[in-house]
Image 1 (cartoon, rainbow, N blue to C red):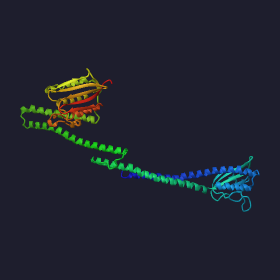
Image 2: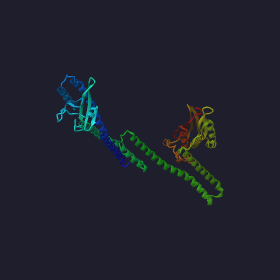
Image 3: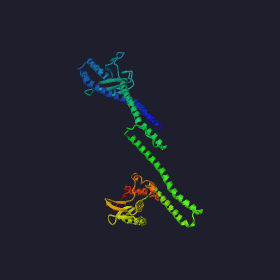
Image 4: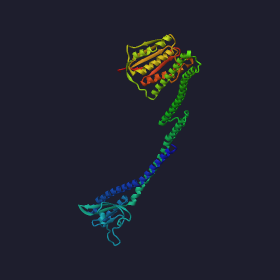
Length: 471
């Protein structure tokens, strides 16, 4: 931002103020001036009509003398602040509130004929009225449909411009006061928006450098969108920090899990090549090499599977199938392992069949991983129960063993990739630590939930849901 956002605000503010003042004192001043002139013309026309009805009809009917008319017009002049003239039918001045009716030659003064033909006039000076620009109103005096003369009211434009200037000055003062108010508002806007925005930018730069412990240097009592933005960025930084830690652990784990079988394979192959291992033991060590190769294959397949879920490339083939039939087929694959450990796999189904809508291959993988884990961590001569139960539009599935269980502090970590709960006792040394991570990704990709209940030295139960078919 480099402090230029406030500068832009200030430039916009000055442009608005200056352009508004220019417009007010040009276009606005002209309209105010014209408005005052038009208002005075209307007022003078009303006064002219009043003079005609109240004075001139009485004068021409003989009921009033010219002296009485002059006195009345001078009173009106005082209140209306306008020069009043009475003109006869031939254009001669009969009465003038601010001058005489005769010129230096003792002749009656005359007004131009073209002026008497107008009803109003705004323009340059007329020597018979004033040496300055004037506003004049001409009202005919009709008595019994006979033109007897004219009533002429005039006023210098400069007098009206004083009123216009006063109005414009008042508006300028009000506008300048508003300008100060707007400037204070701009400074307040700067404080509540640009300052926290700078804090956000600084924090983002710190987080970009890897300083995820940076704390915003701003008011803690804010409760607005900037506070939400700051909280969101802080949360993002924490997540990035956790992601960075996860990546370090991920690289460490995957390096360890790849290095161990590769070391075995290379060691046995080298020993066979240089004669350290006699030919009669080749089959034994070749079996070990095949075993380690299978471990690498499973680990690679698991990583590829998880990567598909991470990049949203894992497409589900959702179709209807019988869950009970699929579970039975999966269980058959573990007969040998169960026989070796004398473990009983008990299928407790609700009904003969259970039709569900899911990706059969993916759900089969879920059962394979869960049953494999249950056998691995079960004691000899124990039971494993697989239960299905219908509830609403879901089928609730449970895989429960009575083995060593999961420590309480490990329950939240079992879904993490490469996490192994009992490496110290060697129970899961053959595993990759990816099985439960894959299980959770598959269940969540179906829009379902999976949970675990476990007590150490008592057993573990995994419970998840699958959507029924035809619902």
